Length: 103
Image (cartoon, rainbow, N blue to C red; front, side, top):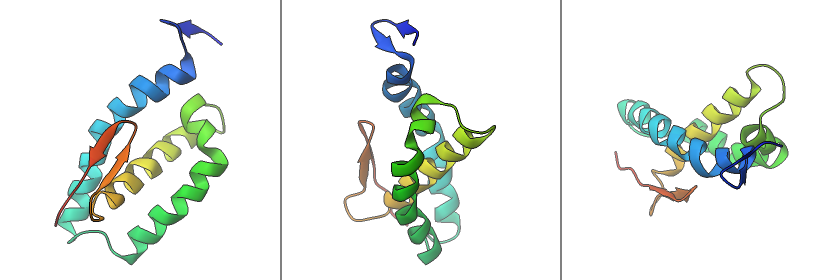
């Protein structure tokens, strides 16, 4: 695997690119959720189910691979889940970022 500044590509993605991309995407999902009055039961269910998806296929998000578009789907699902969880009391922290939203 190619090394960049002492980190593997996957490490660089996890530590640099992914958090930066989430900083752009999560606020958009939060805005969409606020526009509809906050997360509903379906949003909460999807966020809860997403933990299983990440456990099974999270390597695709961190390392790439999979079928065409699968990494993008993993990213969007993760951004949506973080946005939903940001409405929980105390918010959510992931990849060194704290997200907390109110309706």
